[in-house]
Length: 490
Image 1 (cartoon, helix red, strand yellow):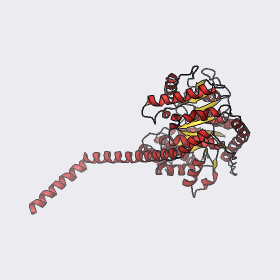
Image 2 (cartoon, rainbow, N blue to C red):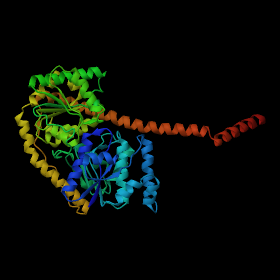
Image 3 (tube, rainbow, N blue to C red):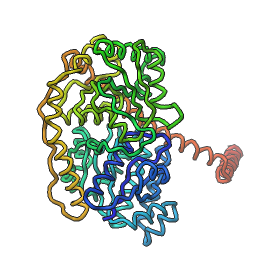
């Protein structure tokens, strides 16, 4: 089969996690002797990083909620016409449709793009799913996080997109629960499966020699995104707090600090690279290593043999745990919590996800130091590796078979024995429950407000246009004449 793969790839800002998912899906499909065809925003970019692969330009949706909803409505309307292919071409989906017509199935790869916070990505995936169904192409999804923030409209759109899917894999228990809620009564609820992140076992074979990253053996590996600084009163306070924490851990445990960026524009020094530079400049320990953004495979390899990984991003944790490396997730948003907590739970780990204000707590450093050299934790992870690797293989076998028409039951993710973090981290993590509820509640309020604001803006624009219209002038004149007639009668 030729399987079209929608992953969030080809962006000018290189995002290791999204690209890693694209690589993993490509590898899995090729391993089963099928041909992946990648949907991308930049075909040259994707061929550079993926090598010899077929590509299709993907559909790009506008950011404002009402505009992307209107665009999606156009797709639905086109699919309902007598000649949907022609209608889709007429509204600007020609390249995507022609590419999908040349494929036998469509796969929507994983990521954190099924939520209203990044609604333009959600709408893109819904559109591809609807078009795939309209063209009679079997559909699958894997490694997704749903929400946690979803508008009513977006939840309904996801239901419509999921309904024809033959296999649906979600990478955390929260997403599985949300999917089963909005899919209640749909046959698709029966194919929803709890899976691992698609890039969990991305191989460590070198893809690019230029700009490759050497493993940070025995290092404290750190990845910080911009939101790791955002909750504080000012940036300098956040930078100072991170520097003090990392200094303490590195000095006490005798580790070199290696910063590994996961999102930045190559050569621009922005994104994670900027945050890393600010924190490194404020640190006192010597030997700090600042890496530039590299490709997804080498970023995964960078954590191999590390003593500890500390990250505010998701995929450094995914890569660490799958290589038997202890990790701590620091979350500044409800969205980050949903994903990071999910990956720790998939490995039976509790208390390893902390709220961002934990960096101000002196006991955080002690808890992190306790993880360095924790042979029990390493043994726990290594014991889980073959079980989870086998499950990942079985899941992809099932997914591809489902696209071929074999709709037997999906494999189940094996439960892992629970292992708690050091007591200092567990105590801090308990505070995360309240933080997560508040953060997720705030994000839901924001997407609802954003949606309502666009409605209000459209209503204002329509009212202003009406006030400028000939019809309004005629009505105003008629009302004025009526008032004069009434006065005349009086």
